Amino acid sequence: MIKAVSLFSGGLDSILATKIIMDQGIEVIAVNFIHPFANNKKMKEKQNYARSMSQKMGIELVEIELKENFLNILQNPKYDFGKNLNPCIDCKILMITQAYQVMKEKKASFLVTGEVLSQRPKSQFLWGLNIIDRDSHLKGFILRPLSAKLLQETIPEQKGWVNRDKLFNFSGRIRGPQFDLAQKMGITDYPAPAGGCLLTDPIFARRVHDLLIHNELTMENIELLKLGRYFRLTSQFKLIVGRNEKDNSALFNHAKPKDYIFTPSHSKGPTGLGLGVIDSSTEQLASGIIAYYSSPDVEPLYIKIQHQSFPSPKMVQPIPLSLDQIEKYRIENFPIQFTRQNTQKTPQK
Ligand code: SF4
Image (cartoon, rainbow, N blue to C red; front, side, top):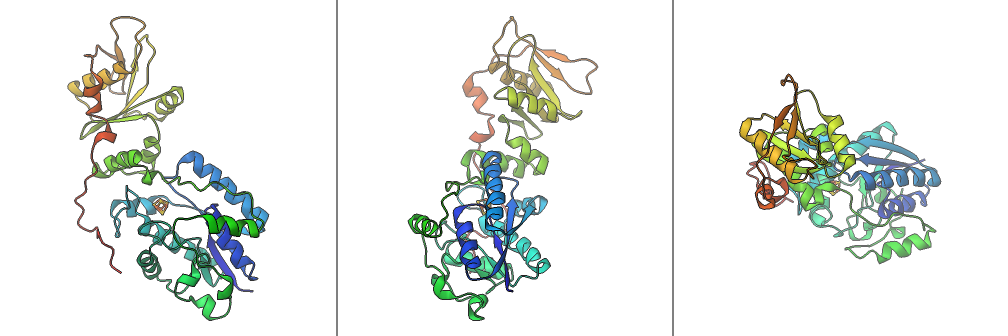
């Protein structure tokens, strides 16, 4: 029996693509990627959905976590970023090459994706798809059932494993044809089309940009980006300020001995996690930011700073700061600028 490996995000397009191929009598193994920049809530929903849907469809599901291999491409994507900090073409090439490993292990003959021609800029434009095929070295072995009739015939079609007449010619952002097809196939239970990749979020992208330009891109720092308000006080020091109790306890629990913890003394207010090298003026500034978000129960307000090098917590009386002064240090207010040499603004076809 011919086998195929399908990139299975749990979204409707990937379900349809998988089902179209299964309906042609081909055994499909689904591959689901867990992405370091997935919005945790949406990622869990989609992941759970991929699990339950693969069970319902009676197919094997292989989960692959992208980690440092994704961070490597984010540091210098060959095909640049999308609208924000999303290196989609490079990301797709990475996913396809990872799925190819599964294809080899499972002795499958080709790959299936739910991509729709021109549904998204760059990575789903024709030249983007061609680059993905070429750079993954799988030209002819990647079948996109939803748009296949608009694309060059692939090897599974040429060899007669897949009947091209039963494939589709969907293109663009309109989702109606997919919804109609889902109804015809009896697929009624699928997640709402929604992003979930934080690199496409302009606010979050600026946080990631800060890590990139300060050479701080690690899996651990990425998880921290999902918490609190972010301030870059100097090139060597940043402060994360909790927005609520959940953030505060997560920041407190995350602190390593080398990190600084800022809390208002005898007052309600946020926890601040300070990372990097600090001097006395930066201590004042960080304390001022914590004070701004605190509600003093006693006057004057002191900010307590804890660090392994202090024999006992240090008490700092902060100089009051205005919102305008604070906003100057907010990472989200810094523009994204790159001067990488290796990035091609216009992908080569
Ligand atoms: S949106 Fe994010 S996960 Fe999707 S292809 Fe682009 S970089 Fe990858």
